[in-house]
Amino acid sequence: MSYVDVRKVVRYPPEAFVVATPADLSSGENRVADYTTFPPYVIVLQGFSFAALDGASFYVDVDGRSRYVYLENLASARGLDFEEGVKVPATRAAYLKLYSPSSVSGYQLRHRVVVFRPTTALKMQLGMELTARDRELAGKLDLVRLLGVSTPKPFDLAAGVERVFTVAGKQSPTAAETRTVARLVAPDGHKLILLAVSAARPVAPGKAYLHVYRDDLEVMKLDLYCLPSLSYEAPVRVVALDKVTVDLEMLGAGSYSVRLVYGVGRLTVKEKIAWGLELTAGERSLAEELSLFDKVEAGVE
Image (cartoon, rainbow, N blue to C red; front, side, top):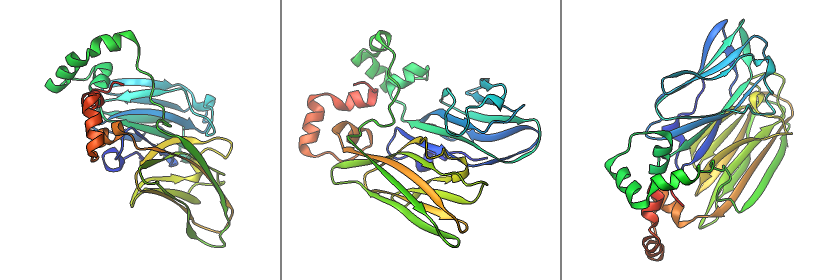
């Protein structure tokens, strides 16, 4: 199984990580990913992509609900250059399962995990248990009325981005080699966000991998065989206040093309509060004047 180790890799939520690893399927039910160790975060599973496979079916068990998502026959899958229209929030556990009519080696599939810190508003929206502090904030900010007026907007993975850049490159090693294709540094007072990845797919799995590091911690290892082609990009959101490094590991001679998209934006007071960063005296005064500590904790604008 391949999955996101949420509590290990998340640092500045909301963030989004892609799993792009081929699966060796046996005949019958296969567990392709389990998510059971992500609390206290909340996750949203989306970005599902599959190679067409006649007779195969995909389903997700979420928070005790069996087959909450069910794709009956992957013969109708849109393919790796697209995403299926599925969005599944989970607060306790999620199990991704794939039934295969026969054994298949190196089956291509991909999914994305969006990770949130559960604010009071998000807990209320998802029906989660509230703490005494949550109830205090809900009453103070009248969250019941606010949530009744409108449905909260879906989170934009590009939120906070002011400028967008693309890195496009081609590597042609003559033997096995790992090269750095991008070393992205956040300007002072700004955040840098890796937004998307794509690649020219090799003809077989295990030929090349993208390794994505935030500072010195690897947060994603992606097999190019499961990534979208250069005509489409897999959305992600990896936030860095220092740097993001992307290495391309090539296990043999050949030609390997990859593309990355990233954005840069100013680091705001609300983000600094949400991520527990130190505020200047001026920022703290502004936050207190605008009641930002309560609003950020509650999850309201």
